[in-house]
Image (cartoon, one colour):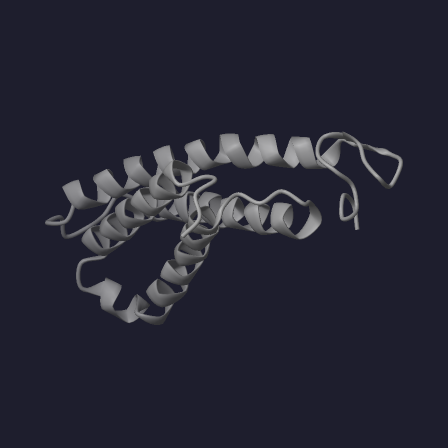
Length: 143
């Protein structure tokens, strides 16, 4: 496992230069902000269209991009936890798992989204955006 016994950035106890984990950590940082902005924009778009009978064709792919970015973000966080000795804090980790569980619960209740899909997806993405912001704000904080 890359970085499992190595220290922080640089040459670890295992004797090689750990270049993967700094890249993944930087990607996790940048992708977090991108996912938050996309979820916020698509969420506001959905809430603004909640009265419309027909939705633009681009709305559902935009929702998919927002959900995909946020799930990729959570996956990168899990990969960092599993392969490095870095500890981002309990609350940061908690909010990452809450994001994943939120999407799982939304999948279970997807039949309810048919009534007002723009409003439902808009509120879901705005909620997840808020969880992402809380995750960033609580980096390094324990319970």
